[in-house]
Amino acid sequence: MNKQIQIEELSNNTFFWKYYFCWSRGYDEKEEINIDEVLEVVDTNEEEAYAWERTFFNEEDIEENPRYVTGKINDNLNFAVEFAEYEINFFLNDIYIGNLGGHFEAWFFTLEELLAFEKHPNLFLLFLPMTGITEDQRDILKPFIVKHLETIPKFEPHSEYLADCILNGLIMESPFQETAGIGLTNNQNHSVRNITDYPRYKEEVTELNKILMTQK
Image 1 (cartoon, rainbow, N blue to C red):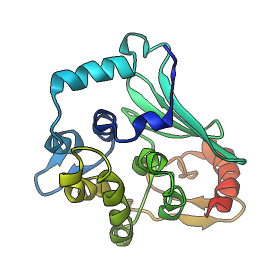
Image 2: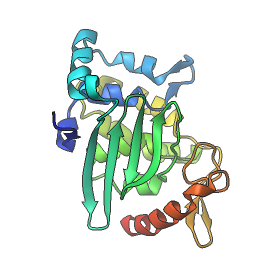
Image 3: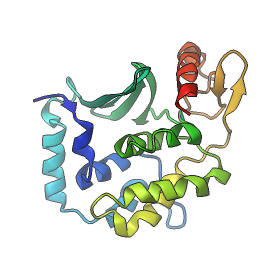
Image 4: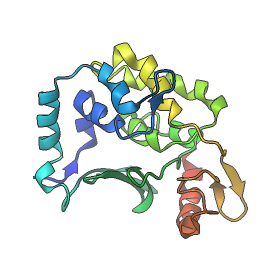
């Protein structure tokens, strides 16, 4: 089985996006339920979803040979999203930028950086859980999320609610800041751009900051 997933395969793919967003950090604050329970509002047949997942990700072989989505954004930037057995890993130019899973590390993209990918809907949605925003940016980002969720079959009636729950998982306590000689960093726990707590990421963050500056 081909391990590479063509990003076009994700368009209008209800099973994929329901599976994918279950890995995000979203939640319904009022009902006190996590995103996997929230996504139950998207009505899909469980047996069909299970069969799709086993086939799509080739689960018998996922531990040794995980499937992945990869592509070239422009001449200076490429991406890869790897679906391992217990986590989803993210890379830019083969540099690790975080994961969704048991050892969660995210809050890499700023709002401005995410919106630079908005013209690529599948990429925008893939990068969404890796984005960190402040509370005052919630209302700016929400319409973009709603617009893209509405294109996914069976998501449309719940797009406002799902957007609110996804946004809850993107709020950071510490905003991004400009650090001399490095570029954008933050002090948020579990952030790859937190070079104070994770100095091992300093060189890679500096390199990617230079490239991402050109995407704005």
